[in-house]
Length: 157
Image 1: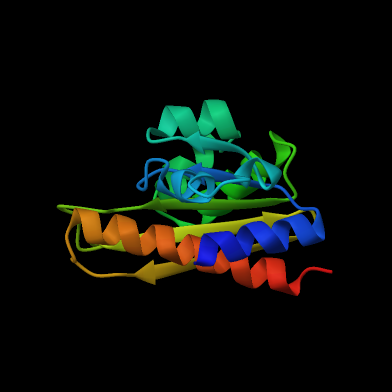
Image 2: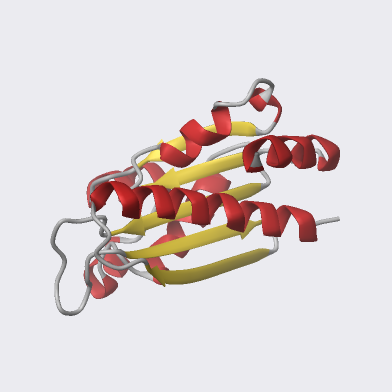
């Protein structure tokens, strides 16, 4: 189980995790806290579904939202940085996307932007999951975020 492996690795490295989630609505935080002992790695989670919540809770810039929209790598980066700054964690993951149904020509259903921040590095990426349906996009985004956390954790000293 990936989350149990994440827990063991986090304990070994003495790391805490925080999550900033939009389209997944707390699914990453839920997955991380499903395993016994997760309080050793999970500090807190932010569910910032609206733009106002992203600004108020995470310090996302309104000008960034206006220029790029909520579903953008720029916002994902600011969400991850904001979660890290507002927590006791050493690693933050963020998710913002369009789970569906819907989307547009420019931001299609299934587009999800991720951020991963530690004190000295921020990584962002966009994944096009496609129009899999709302539930499947959300699960795929959750799993991708957990995989990102695992890869980063393995690379840290």
